[in-house]
Image (spheres, rainbow, N blue to C red):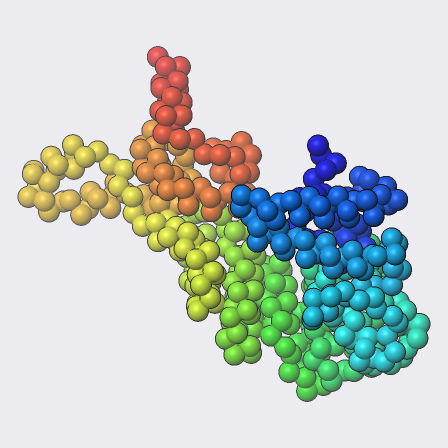
Length: 406
């Protein structure tokens, strides 16, 4: 039954109240069922621990149940935020007593994905320390992180982030992290003009911007149509980080999402050249990061295949011409009767001159998979991401088209 799927949840999504209650089936069950549901889930996985397999998984889930049940042993959920401690236990957090403790609590809550309690802790701290530069900076970083990592946040969150990041920057204009928080806010709200001015404004205070800000500047440049400027900022981001693999990974994702995918599908020679160049930059950004290098393989193969010539001429004519001219004319004919791979793919599966070559290009699943992530479609497609026809479907459509012309 659908309402019993909670028994199969292996761990809570976060340590926020509702996610822990979901772990114990509340809802669909009413909160009054909490103790009974804890008992049911504990016994269910106790039996599974002696099953034919999966005993390690069952043991891990039993451990979660024990930890969370101890937290809820009075049958009620605590009103205060909850933290998962280094020793594996849970504890209830009280109000922060110092700015340092506030920073620690905000970091724990962010790691746990507990958005509501991040906001609650920030609001309480602002009431307690409205003008403390250290408090303003901690909250500015926390709220701007939410804006960066979560979609569809309430307008009140955006407004609060605006006010706090502005206040933090005014209070600590020489802090690189204050500039980072404001840059996150500006990009998250689409204020690209403000993003573009951050580098020069920070320079007037002698501030060296952290690597993440250069990534933000890159994305802003890409979205404003300044591809070259964006690429320069991504390279700067990697340089500033000292080649940090985590930064390389983020930078690679940025150029794929903001430059490479928007160039697909390739529809002209200029776009083909831009695509190839962008893939080469992405390959440099991904150096030494195995998962990023692996994700780029399809893009790199297509970059080579797209600009390479694909012969679409008549093989009989080619053989005849070779014999007739002593093979001297073959290079000329080969070039004249070839098309770039991107053009063959663009012209579609039923083009009478190149449908066989289209099938050869499309036969590699990676080409279709890569294009399925594109935001635009080929003219021969009805919708973005529509599955490509296989060989039999192409042949059937060509036969149908030919029949209609007789």
